Length: 543
Image 1 (cartoon, rainbow, N blue to C red):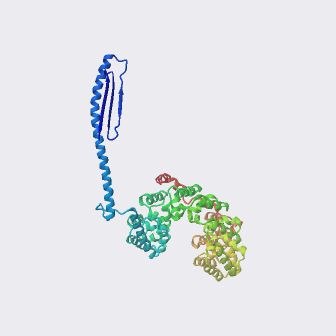
Image 2: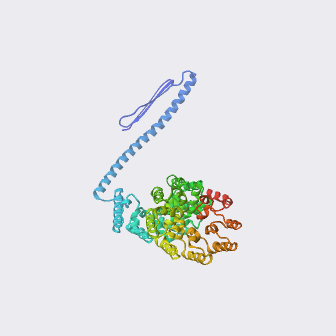
Image 3: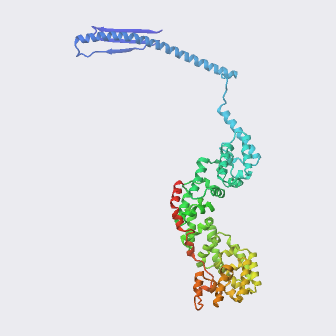
């Protein structure tokens, strides 16, 4: 039962106490005690207390009504909620007992979804194992839901020329979508100029490119390469030769390696050509690879600027392993009686010598010359010093040249002296040598000993040098050695023709030696570089 109680106590309306409570089984009690200040005038206090009584009575009625309604509504709400909850629980229990669903659409549980996903992956794995692909590294990788989609990816990779072995080398490629990843990347490379015939080798070396974004990953690298003065038509060749460059950061190894090369003296205008011929430089670390290599060549006596010129001409020498090839080959040269003072000129003339599998070659050649012309080990070292390219000659051509000299009438001892003095006689075109020898024998009518003393005669052009100078010498009636006539520049020869007597100096009996200073000269005029400096700076900013 709802009980209501109201109490108003007034004493001459001087003080008023109002009490009000509402309740159900245990009534609550609210007491409001209001007193007016004593300093107000009596009349004002009586008037105000009377007004306040009226207001309180009015508000009391409204409040009682409101609280009553709220209390009744609250009880009804609570009752409805409890009943609703009980009925829902009962329905749920009865539904579970009867196996019926309260909804037209049933959703699978999280456990059901995980089980289905695992079953799909198991089927895909079984398919991959069936064709020879090991899927162990694919755990955690998002794969196609169905076997058909996975088969589509495998078939597409087969069309590109990749084998099961290639896929096993990088199984993560199976996570690439054909339409979203593979086709956009390959289309971009094809439009860029990369030949389709190179796609197979390209993907074998750098399959990660299929994960790349054309806009975010590939295109910026292409622009950067063009900014390094690599011509647009050469960019595809660079990518074909070194596809790994697409995985490098623009401001990482690539920029530091180029900056170092320019710093040691590689001409800025040559950078594009250097990188086009040997793009692997872009992936070389300066501190670990390039700098130690340059410093070692300097230690052999090659000036840093000369090293820069060697890199401009033969950039691939930077790919020679310092500890595994370069240093062992230098030691091999010393072991084969090459004098250390000649090491710098040998490497400068033929830098490939420090990257070859050198020791077996030298052993074979030394045995060959020892048996053919009785060349001793010390003289074998002199042959290498005078012609480092000799180490790359094969056996058959050398024997043919030796036989030719013997046919010309030279003894084995004379041939040996000629080979030591000018090893080029083992590598020249035999047809040209034959023409020179015929002119020497028929027109010049000299003794064979003259050729033994100056075998470099065979290295001069017959029409450009030998004939014109022989004619002038004959007209003037000068009797001179072949070295005096040939081993000098045209300007020096004209000066000699003005002499009354033939004066010999020691250098004339030796063929021209290698001049290290020739390497310090730029490959092109510096004016070419100065003319285009502004253009290069613009390209640097573009990069």
